[in-house]
Image (cartoon, rainbow, N blue to C red; front, side, top):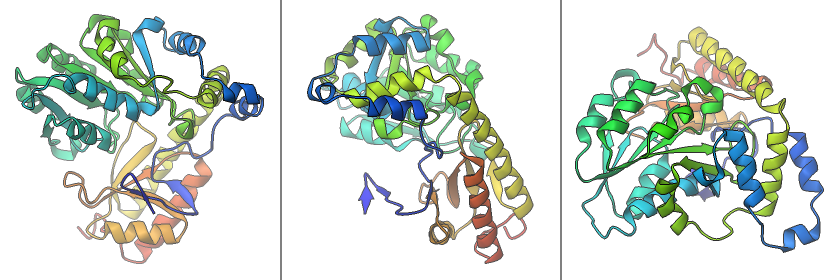
Length: 352
């Protein structure tokens, strides 16, 4: 079975969607179990929820929009930018490889999508992105840390792009920033009226199944997005989970520490096994395994370890992406990688 283009893995260890491999906070589960039937039977009132998220990010509630996963926020940004323009020549810039919804969202609104390929070793193509800006540019998607590479975009580069496209909305997707807090530009947002920052509670907080995203920006920039946001787009169970997750102040740092340990274990395994990889600031590691990548993904799945096949993307040929989460899960993934290397399936540094 395939869901939105992603094969359902079946049983086994899910290391293919960058989820929190240990699950959510137990306080979240307690809060959900405490819900009453009347809570579920009534439409939610988001005022308390928006205020809580605003406090969490240190912004006024007028500076944010709650979305049904950050994916919805990406689509809302595209709809708000292009849906009412009635001009098929307007452009969106997407550095690639990229999170797929950037491309599907711009395609859905018939925007002209300008794809900017990476530099060597996935270096961010700052000059090429700036050179691609034209008077027709209306939307730019920037992802830091990047999915699938784990690479970050330096602040000074973000500032250059923001300044180069004052007529465009620059969406900076910080879905993985909890694993690299220094990479956030949220503190600079008041100075950039054309920027919207995207955040999610799916990854570090373990709430992917609840679909909770946030767009943060100047109220004037968010007006068009509010105008196309569905009424009651967030559900009561999700909002209950969100409050409980924010209240548990020990859960996030513990999981971030586990991810850091897991990344180091994956790096060490790649060095030992001769697998090329890219150091990551997110909760996953991109590896180059060669021309048999799809076969390797299937072989790993047969051992109960599901990873993401990125080899079909022309900008990441021969690559797979492995989630770094609970260390015991990482050790299981390493054992499976050792098996595929022993089977001669992986194109290691010595065989390239």
